Image (cartoon, rainbow, N blue to C red; front, side):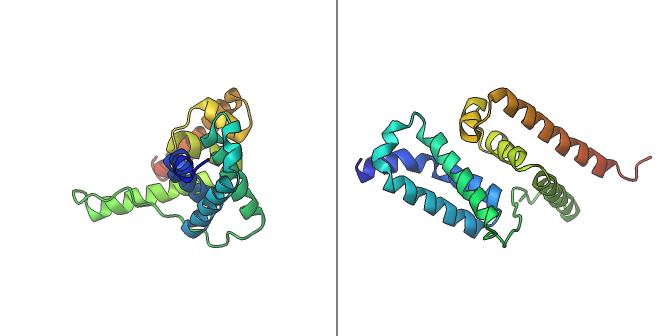
Length: 169
């Protein structure tokens, strides 16, 4: 496989790989390292990529496994959450702080989920993969993914409702 063919194959999902690595490792630096490592591994095995039915799913599986290995080896010590979707000049500072706190709280709730639930939420709700693709990446049946996603969303929803109703009688 030539370099241009490899780049055309890999580059369309490079950002997805980074976002998944960022979700799992949290640290931007660690996620960048993971992305670079994955692309290097794909490059080394570029001649075998044609054997895979879905190279993107294969790459996402490699990313997941690499990130879990990094977390297990305790190399990911620099864990921080960053969120900057709320940047509107039309809302008050007080509202911006409330939104930021809510987003941070959702991140905390998600971090408290099981590794499998975190991964499924990332792949389905952030990366917008369909259930069959997630099944291929995670290695479980689509029905089990639906159940795990439903339970994860329910946990997030219940904890958010509990947080926002605190003190209301």
